[in-house]
Every structure is written in C-alpha cells, then in structure tokens.
Image 1: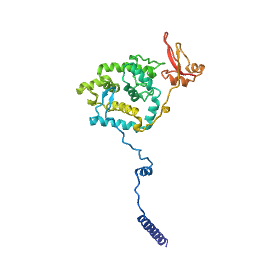
Image 2 (image 1 turned 135 degrees about the vertical axis):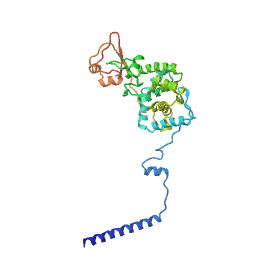
Image 3 (image 1 turned 30 degrees about the horizontal axis):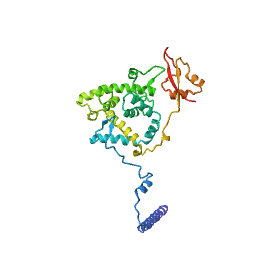
Image 4 (image 1 turned 90 degrees about the vertical axis):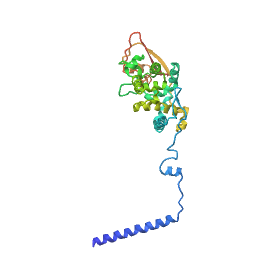
Length: 311
C-alpha cells in the first residue's frame, strides 16, 4: 500500500511540472523578445562595455632616439604583449605612476647632467619599480647593483652603510656604468639590454649570432622581453589616458620638504639620536634607507649626509 501511495504522489508531481512548462511556453510565445545591447549584456555579466579594450599601439617608437622596428611583425607582437600585460595590471601601474612623483623629475635631471638619455628612467622602473628591492642573487636598490659592481662605481657597501639603497647616489653610479657600456656597444638599445643580462653575456650573443642589433638577436626569455617591458612603461607613462589611467597632479605621491643633516662621528643608537632631535627611528630610516644597522661607525675624516623632514 505504501508503495502505491508513492507512485501516485510521483505521478501527480510529474503532471504538475508538465502543466507549468506548458503555461511558461505559452506565455513566452506571446512576448516580444528584445535583443540586449552590448552595455546591457555587460551589466548582466557584472562588467561595463569598456571592460576589455583593444589598446592603441604606436606606429612609430624609439628608445633613446634609436628606432624600434615596428614594421617587423615579430617586434610589433613583442611590444604589444608587454603593453597589454602592464596596462591590464592596473593596480601595479597606478602605484608605479603615483610613486614616480617622488623620484622621476630629479632622476631625469641626474641622467641629463651625466649625458644619459631620459628613457633610462624607465629602465629603473623595470629594474625595481622605484623601490629598494633585493633580488635572490643579491642585487639591491633602484638600479639593482651587485656588491662588486656597486663598489667599482663608487658606492659604499659595508656592515653599517649600503649606498645601493641611496637612490640619488646609485643613480649617479648607474650613469657612470651606462656611459662606459655605451663606449663598448655604441647603441643605447644594446646598453639597456646588456644591463639586464650583463655586458659579457650580451657581447657573447652578438659574436655567436654574427649580429649587433638587439632586435636581430635570439636571447633568453627575460632579456628578450626586457627592453619591450621598458618600452611599454614609456608608452603608458607618456600616454596614460590612452590606456585608461587618468591621474591628476594631486594623485602623485610627493616627498615632504627635506633638510640635510651632516654627521661625522659614530652614533651608537640611531633611535636615540633621532628621538633627541624630534624624529622617530622610522622617519630616519624611511629617508635614509642606506643606513643598514641601528648604529653607524664613521671612519676618521669621513662624513655622511642625512635627509630628514623639515619641522
């Protein structure tokens, strides 16, 4: 008996479902179907009609005054790849742009004063995102100097002091390195590429492949993409609205007015030294990241310049 009741209930449920479907189809037949616009479809999917964009790619482009051969389809595709990768990494690009307000104007002045094309500021962005980062190999700072190279170009690297983290001094050191590299290669494009893979490695690829031009060389994936990443930063930074970045002057970060304090004697406790002068240890380290320890030993006859916010 219980089995019969279950069969009856199942049959009634099935019949009710069929009647509902018939009524729904009948109602649908009497309705006019209005196609959705692109914007409405986008709204249903939770996105705006402009969420996915085809970006403009420059018809002509140069790096440091040297033409990029964009009429070569393979070269065009490599540039386009890096533009899309970086333009659609919006959070990173916005922060890069905002952070650049603290450094690029002065960096450009240092590059110009030392005969380096302004486009090399984008090399610094590609190297470090304008942060004092450290690589697994031990390269540090805005320009990612290894210890031996840093010392060769006049930067102090010791227990207490690491001037690779001093972005102004390391930029001056980078200009000396880049000028020497240009004497070797005679091409700023090659100088930038060799900054990534090393001068010896780049020269070896030129000899092996009987080609001097970066764009004609088969290189490792990192260096193959490197210059195009630098170029993508140049294109986006110089044409931000074309890529959806609409920052106003007030959106860029700025350093506060800073004053210089010269020190020439050992300081056993930098936190106490800062507090005695109305600063926090955090402020001291933010504006002087090249101070690596909580104390500093200063050789006789030497002095250092500290930067601190004006108060």
